[in-house]
Length: 194
Image (cartoon, rainbow, N blue to C red; front, side):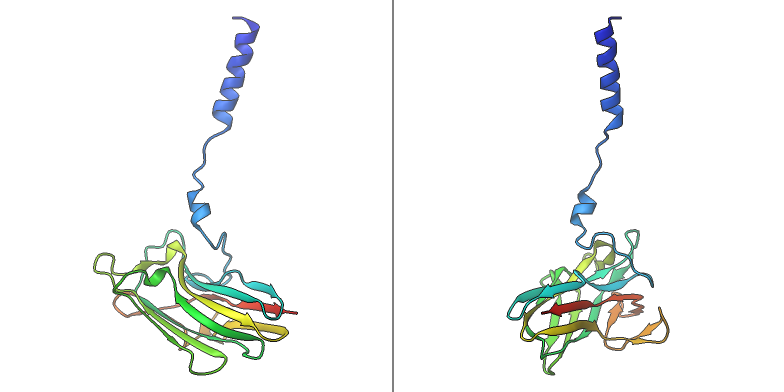
């Protein structure tokens, strides 16, 4: 065997075995990236979790429902209440997310109290009977405008019993049969407006 053929064969084997295609579609489709939740899943997560802004700047804060990639849990509805300082940020709009894409689904927003927004979404679909949280479902998008300088938090309502044990009657998840599902982790959005 000639020396050139031997070198070409080695290069072919190295390139053929050394570089294998990787399906990165899951990585590209996951808007949350690698989510670290200290207290477990499912979780309500604002992503990005920190916003660096200046007065008069507008921004969107998307809220996601995240569950384990292996999860087969179906979610039938959610309720969330978010508190914020109306002296620093002004809520301009709330838009439904992927959870309520079905024409039969319902989406309700209550902004009757300054510094508080409540959102309720119900997934109604005769075929799937729920939404899979393993897809990192976008629940809603909150549009704000910075109206004052300072720091604030878009805080998902909950009460801490200890580090990972929380209670909330203002943030809820239910399955398609309206049974409560425990929300184990929350990620608020921090606002730095200077």
